[in-house]
Length: 560
Image 1 (cartoon, one colour):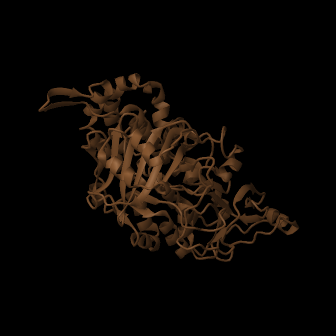
Image 2 (spheres, helix red, strand yellow):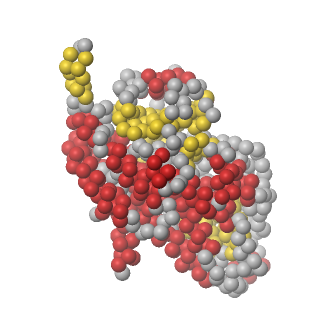
Image 3 (cartoon, one colour):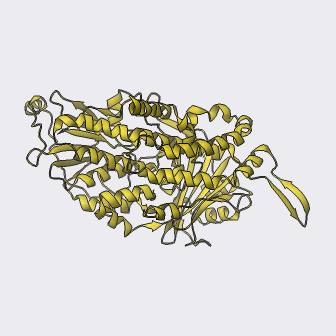
């Protein structure tokens, strides 16, 4: 029960990364799934490059059959390196490959389905916890990122009343980072980030143009993957970093990649995202603004060099892009939806051209306890196992935490016979924290759109004394206003303190969340009933059934 309130506190948090167009075969900071009619595209390096093949991919023949059955040298050494296959060259896959690149006992092959890397995709947020991992484990990559990085955590960030255009609550990203000597949160263009990684990896690590279809674990505990072409690649370890529609996960769990039975769920929300050159009145002062109001919300964020990105979140059925007509264009459509809202919203919408706007439906998946993260020498990473909603800006950050923990476990192995236990240890270290962040991200979306409203207010001006928006939701939203800064402090302490993934359960955060979470539950109890949230935002929705299981397992392991 302690963790119930842990997952209640993250009502809002900066997350420009998660709203950026997503690479379909990779783990990424937020997952915006293209509408069915759109062709998936991949965010990659500045120059279009066909990378060299990094492993032999010959058709399975009698010699390969012998390899599957022949005993392998148990000792891991430069002469017999650990062959690590990574499916998916997204943030998590690239990060894992990069941290293993200088280990003479490891040979990494990254298998990416797209045949070319081309410049596509918007900015990705890297929060302080992710940057601290990069600073600690991969200083060369960290330096490259800093050369192209835009800090937002050192500026004003928070929630604004979408109707009145006044600050509702601010969240402090600066002091939590400074007190821990961590870098400030910020953003980098997704293609720039991947270019940094590919520059350090070189052309002999990534194999393009042939995605992984499935895998097979052999009697000698090695693993082979079958590619789309029918070719086969052998290794000692396989990491499924191939995104929310993961082929590795589907093969591991004998379930469909998409649709019913896949474990991926539609969030109930669609998002419109725009990116443009924009002369904002608060440039250099404000990093991130969330405009809240009845039934929807709007985000504007500074992404550096005079560029801005905005997001409009609406509760819609899946596939709404095909069903809703927009005869005057998307910008005009959104201006009508946000009629009566802040002029700031309308100003940036009017400045955005039609080709600068995209729409995505939002999907996520909770981490699973009942369904394993591992299968012998095979493990899942990033969106393949815990795709999350974008509200915390932690999608890509959690993929980086996965890669950080996984590389620690792999590099500590001295024998191949240890790999199975090392991968299980990785999943144990990551399960509770990733479940908490995933559950918080989903709950944040639900409560913002379904629960909160324009705050109630007593106004006394030349028109006399009057009451504005004195419905129950407006009153609750107003009551919670002074409490939210406390939530944010606890939330960022939780995110920034736990990046090493050394604790199964963060008891300090759990106690704080229990107290403050109980308070918000008490205040919002009537609101939940009024909006039908009592059923929709109960224990399993806030925490997620998998999150509940993760905590139970962690507690059992701690005391048994």
